[in-house]
Amino acid sequence: MDLENTKAQMRKGILEYCILSILSRSSCYASDIIKELKEAKVIVVEGTLYPLLTRQKNAGLLSYRWEESQQGPPRKYYELTPEGRAYLDDLDKSWDELVESVNLIRSR
Image (cartoon, rainbow, N blue to C red):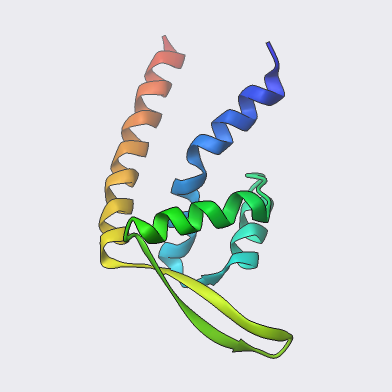
């Protein structure tokens, strides 16, 4: 079995949750989201991030606004909607339950 593939699948499974968690603190430009994910070793490329952001926006979890940039064209900043905050609260509870379950299994 390929350990790296399994680890990649685990990271992929929590990517949407991580994006919402990042945006819960403040609105962000996509490059800022990628930077934070890379710093946390949840590696992602733009080709992965943008479809997820679009899917979350279409689901009503995110909105965006355009801001002028000193370094080029206007930038799209994403932020959570009220529905996104409620969804993230539910995910937080699910995450805590999952971690508790896994820890219980691991400690036996």
